Length: 115
Length: 114
Image 1: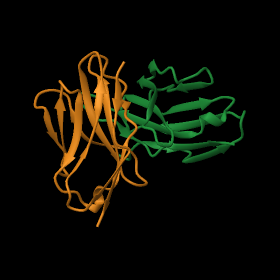
Image 2: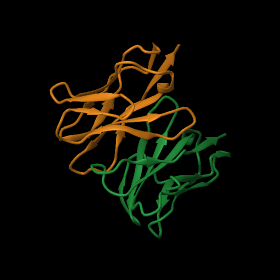
Image 3: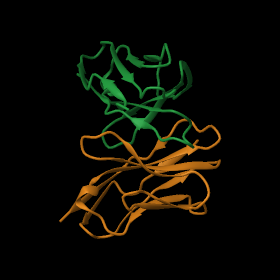
């Protein structure tokens, strides 16, 4: 168990650019979640995958955001035409089963700064 | 839809003092409740959870939380804190029918000093 890995740890980009983050969940965890956390706030749910299927998306996930998990293993989160309000910590979490039987394992996050 | 309110953003305490971190939730359905902890420079990790059964749940490092349905609360307590308990604590709720996304509170920063 090497834990949930997120890459990069930090990303600085100019407004209007596209960015992509990667999350490698714990091996054999079929559930993968993306959250966003801004300063002074708790993590906000963005989207959730079970295997390769994206089963739930938050209203927070505007059409500039897209997430994929093509083979049911790693996932990518892309933000197009970044805005300063997108600056946040983006967290990925995985679990082997539903919340009632297993906790979420969080990565250390990708910190995005949009200038 | 569920929501979580953590009433205190910061709680400073002295070592060996008792502490309570408050959490209230709202939901129209039955819920699962969780406390997650984030130590400095580390990722979030589960501290304890309430799913069903006994309303008092405990963690391995001396924290406990009690589910109170009538008051819609899930307060976290520890009778005697250590310097190493300094961290940010997040209360979270999930709809136990859908059981997918966790909804987090804004967090409480516990600062323990000697």
